[in-house]
Image (tube, rainbow, N blue to C red; front, side, top):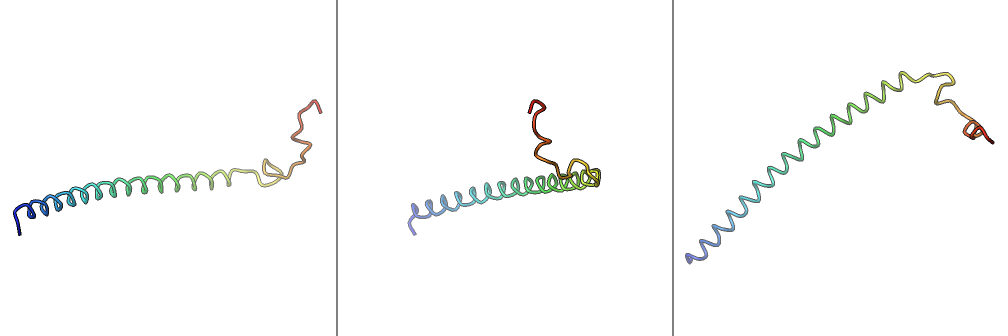
Length: 75
């Protein structure tokens, strides 16, 4: 092989190693974002479950309402 061919191959190998390093770093960051988001989702699910337990079962906020109940008082 010619010396310039060796330098080109070495440069390409170095470039690939740099890209691989940046890719690994990005993958680690994305992994931590996913873990954090899953923790937030789990917390929201628990909060929704708690709110469902607190909601009144008989005729509370979730009970069927008439559309007339939503009319402003001047109608």
